[in-house]
Amino acid sequence: MLDKLMALVAQLYPKGRAFKMVVEGYRESLHRAIAIRKEVLLNDILSTFDSAIPDNANFTSGDASAWEKRLGMVTDTTVDLEDRKAAIIRKMNYPGQYAARGHYLFLQEQLKKAGFAVFVYENRFDDGLGGYYTKDPLSLGGTGVSNQYGDFQYGDSQYGSYFDQIIANNLDAELDRGFDVGANLKSTFFIGGEKVGAEYSGEVADVPANREVEFRQLVLQLKPVQTIGYLFINYV
Image 1 (cartoon, one colour):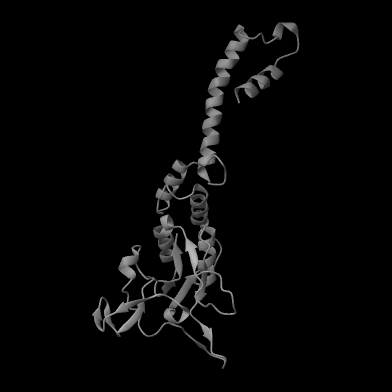
Image 2 (cartoon, helix red, strand yellow):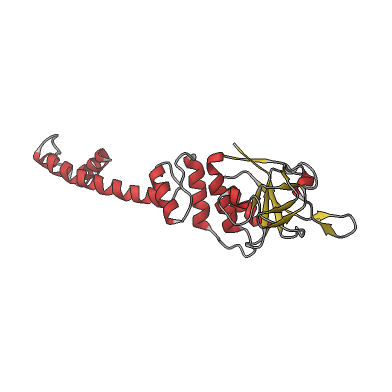
């Protein structure tokens, strides 16, 4: 940068011998001192632009932490910087011009923009008779948790098994494990891997373990409040 500034200064002088820029001469020393201050100013300006939007290679981990704090996002410096930048850009652009922000495909798109390779599915399956029905996650191959018949947190549960990979209200997965979804599953949805057939059948997606809290935060912020998500997620 300094050499470029000095070259520009030299171009502004006439070409006569009296105006020759002698190395380490008085004129050259004067302009070099001015150029050094200008270089500092220009670098500060460029740094401000680079840190303003995470769209460049000079956007640092420190810049990401600052933006995550401003935007109320989870900060984890062990997460890859490119993933953090993608999540910040998504947050900056949210909600955009989307009107149907309660649609499951909007949730899926936002998760992908944040760097999560997951798919979202409605709990809505064709019954072949012109209607639809819902499925329990256990019927899709979800891992069940044994439950003694009797009471458990948030209400009664029949003896047998229940699916505990749920996202309802909490960042902490443990707090949502015993959430009583009830018998009506119309307000539930699935988050998992890409389906291989015509209908979702329990395919699992991978999410980095160090982004689990960030993932849950984003789902909680985007999903309609009354809906409950069944997670077919493997944290790796």
